[in-house]
Amino acid sequence: MADILRHVTKSEDFSEQRKAARLDMPIKVQYRVLGERRDTSGEIRKAAVTRDLSVGGCLLLVTEELPINSEVELQIFLGEDANEALTIKGRIMRLNRAEKDLYEFGISFDSISKEARRLFADYFFAKMYEMIGLPDWPTDKRGKQ
Image (cartoon, rainbow, N blue to C red; front, side):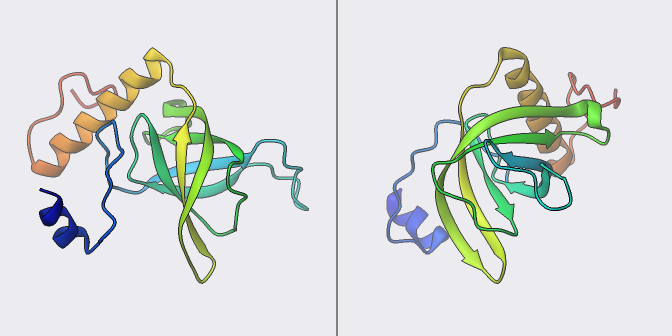
């Protein structure tokens, strides 16, 4: 199995440590590094996009370098309106890559409430159903019944 994963991922160092299923699609996020002062425009939160999102963490794509091991607060938008956003605290664990003002950081979420886990699960399954062309996920709370 590891040989297959190395071939597919083109990686020699394949040590899978994930404990949760991940959804590899861009999701809008606003983030802030906790303890950081406001920038010159007065804004604390900055726009970003996630990749590879799960209940345990995500990859966060940003346009600035962030300090490893910093605590961050993410507002993850799971739907079209701001009421469908989850606010979750996490920690920057690693820098995956940096290219021309684009940084990809691995974020580990500190803890997630049961309600947030349920919202994640509903969102994940609804998106998976949508991606493979099945009827709507029965508990999809985004207004599609």
